[in-house]
Length: 183
View 1 (cartoon, rainbow, N blue to C red):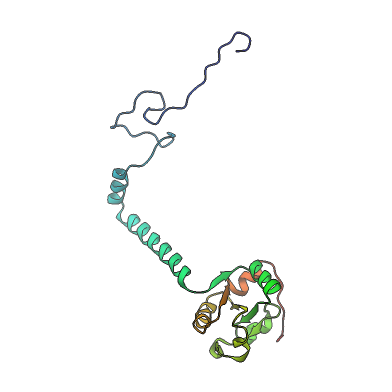
View 2 (view 1 turned 45 degrees about the horizontal axis):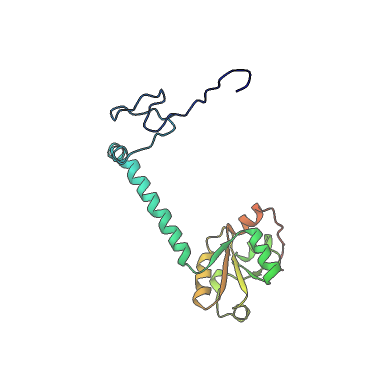
């Protein structure tokens, strides 16, 4: 105690007390700003009963998110971001297969990528078959088409199959350069 003054420590209210320090009764609902306010199961069920549409939407979204995460675990290929792709190319000599139409490929593609039309995509192709042990990264315009090709490669026995997240758009968002022309 300095200079003869007594300092009193103020204590935060306990969870069984109201903010003023009086014991809380079950009939009163604490203000949301109370530090110990928690929602009970009864309150959640009452909310669900009053808002069936919101409750159904929440349950549906939760199931969809869980199903999507489980599907990603078992699909057999991984998605990579542009920075991870550059590391795969530099470190592991990854083969980049661009599935865009020829006109889009000539407008801009990842340097060193090989163009294969989705209609002509064959995992048993000589160039692809030689890369079964190498990482193979599939790229398309938006990242949607390459998923189907990745499934075909995994089924054909390719060990390390990747899809560029966001496709060429994801590459451009990472501010990485594109090559133009056929090669």
